[in-house]
Image (tube, rainbow, N blue to C red; front, side, top):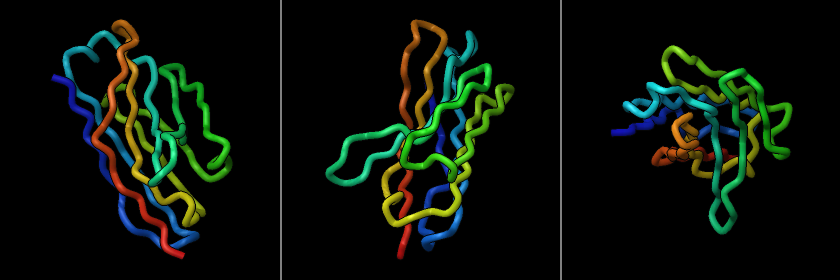
Length: 119
């Protein structure tokens, strides 16, 4: 059974910081994880990439957060971290952990964690 356990969301003032984490567990991950990342979805908007990182630590950040986020990954713990700085009200959204397994490149999603940035 696959589990993605997200933590770290909450309410923060504009200019503040938050750190999200997502730990993946399940037998499918024994064969490896291709990439881990975070997406977000604000009300009335499409889900968009925040940041992702491959097993080889190749990073890809979304345009709207470039320069303000750092994504890291602990392969031994199957955990991904997202450090977000200089947060803006427009960063308010539900943030979803995304994991792509090596097996058949199967994609898994977390349940989402709310991030709210007040002005």
